[in-house]
Amino acid sequence: MIKQTATVTIHAIRSSGTPVSSGSGMPAILTPELALRHLLQLSTDVRTALALARDGGVLAGDAACASAARELIDVLDAALGENAPGELLAPLARGGRLEGTAVVIRALVAPTPSASAPSAPPASSTAPDTLTLVVAAGPHALLPLLRHDLAALVEATGGTVSARAEATSNEAGAVVIWGASRSVQLLQASESAARTAIFAGLSLLDAGKP
Image (tube, rainbow, N blue to C red; front, side, top):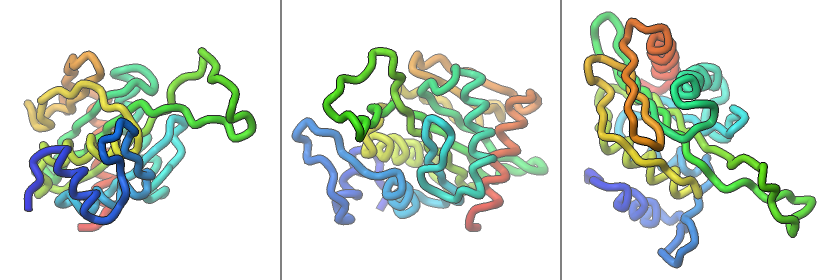
């Protein structure tokens, strides 16, 4: 059954037996590992998926793919600013043939309280944490549905997804990047940053299951 919205995705997570919020005002919470597990169950043709923390550490997924994932994140950082929330879509073409799409979505999450001083108020200078999901999907993935699934799963981990643009990854063959302002940046495949994103995405695609 094709799931059309993020709400349906969360319903599917509930149906699978994973406890999430029932709408009482508390955020729905999944661990990054559970979020990736559900992504692989709910979305078609996902080859590789990783969840990374603000410092680039791998929270879930194949750590052997972390270098390629961080290259995609570096392209997002260069466009929006380091650790800024946003999304990146990169069409993964090789030899003139579209083989899939790389998707990066970064969201803000509440900082984890210090275990040594749980009652201490957070410092005003403390930057919010971020959660970044990096996915390489094959040509059979339904991109709008995949993006909905990713946004829903990020929110299910307690993240806040920024306003989302409706750009597509194959617009003029460009890598598409946007942030909280919804301003879209297009990087043509001939540009250095776009080539970096495409090569990194192809590496993740090749590392995943066929």
